[in-house]
Length: 457
Ligand code: F0G
Image (tube, rainbow, N blue to C red):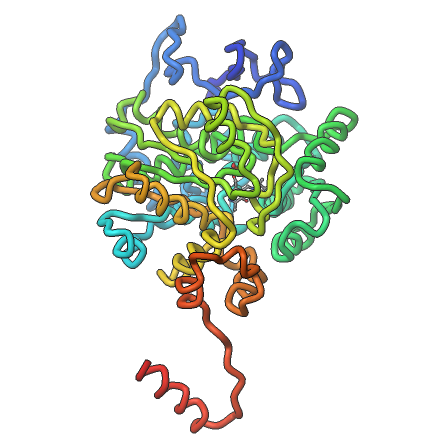
């Protein structure tokens, strides 16, 4: 049995909280801020901790993690638990609830790179996880923690992907799950996943931020374990794509990582992964981490612009990228901190820029859900602003699978997604990307006429 050698630290006042004493809402009792998992024996915060230092050996770890790719053990086949030396949060890691998440592909983007005059553009596709989003990597960690602590019920408020992941992992663990969703504001595919995986699924007549408020009360009044991203154990799982990226780069790291921003936990989770790797001598630098938000759900962008990330004003969120339709993000302080600490940037992108970028990612043969496409739309702005140089290496973090929101894609190609005033300046590029379905008589002549026209075009 492995020792679960972790503690929790408040990101506001630095108070240390033993795992058994954590509040149900995962907030500091003194200052109300969020918590972070840390490992005293190799504290990445740089705080000297008395007692023996048991920093893992980098070379041995790299070898061990590679070896596990050949193993048939479920936890070795998981791209999260393969790195379990860097997330010792469970007493019995071999009992982790896993769907073989992680180990997602890093694709090279040639066409998008060419358009931008860049050489090294990559996409880390977290949509290639078991339930189709990056949430699976966090869910395996936090839900395993919930089970080890004896909970029967888990719950989340969600824009769709967290609920899909939670419902799946809860069912695998034979636990029950409660999902609160903003009615009419999430995609059908995500709603269908929660139902299929067996969650108690409630649509509330409010937005995501309203669902979060209701859930906070539910958690106070009932014995349910909160699985929103304020749960710091989720972020331990979500830091592992950083390890996979470094591994793919032969333990060098790219110059930039660009992440979509919604509730704003994932950017800091990945940042934590990179900072810990550097601290442990696994890699020599940390990429600049940048966050991109939709214009209609841009509180972090405004906070950094107007208050240097010291305070945030919630906004009334509205974007067709429903996954990131969040006006009052819980983890904004963590996101602001990681952007500033790594020298990254924050941008906002319009609805038309998101739709165009999504179509361009589709044409790489990859695809992604709308919220993920903000990364490419943001990259274009960073390059034009001279913040990212054409000779630098960039990884876009694609967070969700293209089939998560096919209604968006179909509306785009049918020309019903965007209003004319939204496409101003991008009309030509958007129409070049749009494809129509053709209704033909069932004859080879009819099809061949179309083929000939396509060949000549
Ligand atoms: N991309 C996708 C596809 C998402 O589902 C989310 C968040 C994000 C990006 C933003 O990540 O919140 O860590 O900044 N979805 C949550 C949910 C809120 O409920 O599924 P973040």
